[in-house]
Length: 176
Image 1 (cartoon, rainbow, N blue to C red):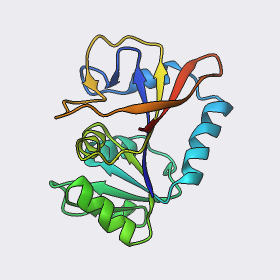
Image 2: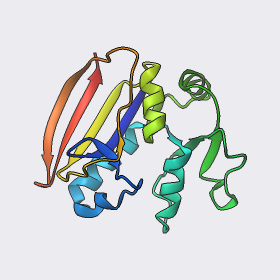
Image 3: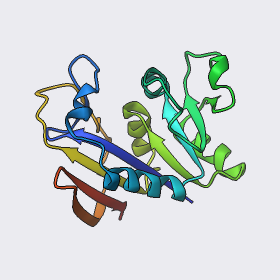
Image 4: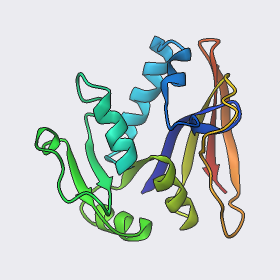
């Protein structure tokens, strides 16, 4: 069982710009190698756990739903998943440990954790086992930080670092 993060940040560590936008992600073209990396992650997971804000962003992409695995949306404000996503996503509530325990108990053992606040909440409860952080060489000068405040240090070891398509640096970390 493991909880994994796979996310992109700006060079200065932001996952969204000052207005909450992520348009800057398209400053790097989507290469076959980047698609391969993402597809490899998807093969290793059983389900995704994402925050409501991330769900809203993904819905806004339009086109085909990007995930072939069940998505659980963490939200205290949503009461129902929009009808067109009912077969793709399900609402879930609780703390990170409650969510993990519930999903693991239902056969979802390897989880992809996505969304800034959701990742931060899982980190606070020491429930992130692996992180793949792709750094896009752009300085946003402010925005939403990937990592929030923690009550104590979390120590990770580096598993690998690679340059993908000469465009981005991808670091893979594992909980020590």
